[in-house]
Image (cartoon, rainbow over all chains, first blue to last red; front, side):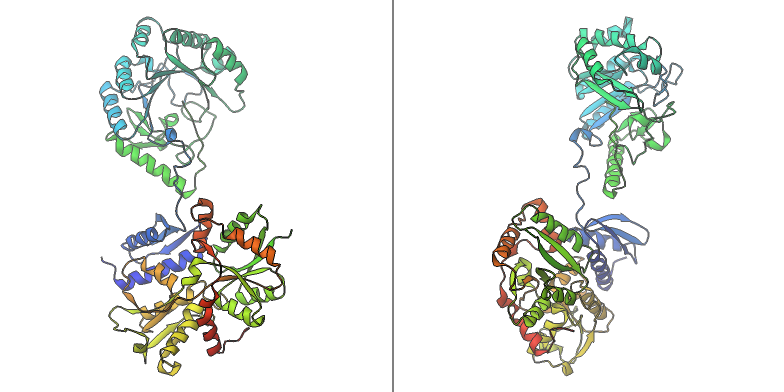
Length: 336
Length: 267
């Protein structure tokens, strides 16, 4: 249907009347008499420095004024789509009591193939991905990890999350064959002493992780520590810094993150699409909003991994929409 | 030093962020300011005359009335650049064949609120100046926002609706309303006559306001900068690019209209 000039004039009157009565930064509903009127509203808003916020069945929600760029408050490396996470596999030699994806030795591996990683990296880079993150499960349990690392590090700076406990035998050889450039090993260490770490991750795991860090450093790898803490658990920053020094790490190479109520965690930060800045996350079962929720059906954006750009666009668009609407108290949830 | 107290009329919700923004801009300056909102211009002018406020952000009619009430002794401190180039546009349906105001003889002319300079008082003057007496026209009047001196634009929109509803042939609109409407594209209505420019709002003060204090306040006001994002936000909301010193000559047409139409200084 083509909107008649007269109907366009009446719509313009409704727009001027509604928007002029509103304060800048607030929204008004402008009734529509026909769906095609949306285009007129959009044109009017663009020309008058107002903004269409949402289109409803019989009305358009107009924001008085220009919307600020919702991404402007985020550093470039946190913009959705700048990081691509990949769950290489979901099985793990540990069964941590807070694991956000319920990994354990018995978990179905759901591994990504080298081909899938290759295509994801290629499409991701083309879509603006700047950093790659590999996680699991324990990536060192993936039989083709060496090839995956080659593919990733050749394309972009890569961070691999690991518990650092499997650097022995053939896996030590796999580690040694990995490039030192463009690769950071992020090894989990929850506390500067074994107590808290072993409480969540199993007796003896702290010492083996420290041994793994020492091994990786001795082989010339860039290493950083990642502590996962529950509410009330102390960061013990000073002691952790002292340990960093012992392990030949810089204090700034430490990431502290909160336990999320995901996977097997019975307590922790409750997250949703509206409360977490997304970090595009690929698994063998689809693309997820954030790596901390990679088994949560509500956080799965699509089961179609490819084309990856479509999934990235969908996540970015939904995120910016949350920001625009001001419905979001975006909590940074750094996993790396 | 006490802040300069400015009165403004709350004709839209946007008035609050506008004046809070201007107040914040003055914070820390030589002469700070605060503001008081009124529900209508008559109340504001009365408060200025009573000394309750130092300055009134007045419409052109409120200014003319203040001049009348102070025997011409009130002062104008500043205006918006956009206040110097205000116009009224007579609009009719496309193809109406009106070329100028004299063609309107016998037509139905929709006018806005009786206290609106742009939608009623000056349009009536322009029609009279074109030789059209009230008897030569069928006036369709919309006194829909009396007290706000046409600031809401509501009576102008009502007048345009009358044209669209074929209850009037022509409507008189302020140029800002007309420009806003035409941003929707072709609206089937065209401008048939556009008036000469005339003045709109200004900051009006009584002669009792200390001149040095007033000058310090105005000097700081004039420093608001379109290229400064914080200032620009306020300037955009208030509809100007820069504050300017007053040019009172351009109020002449409204003074004449008020006199000719015998509009009282109060009502």
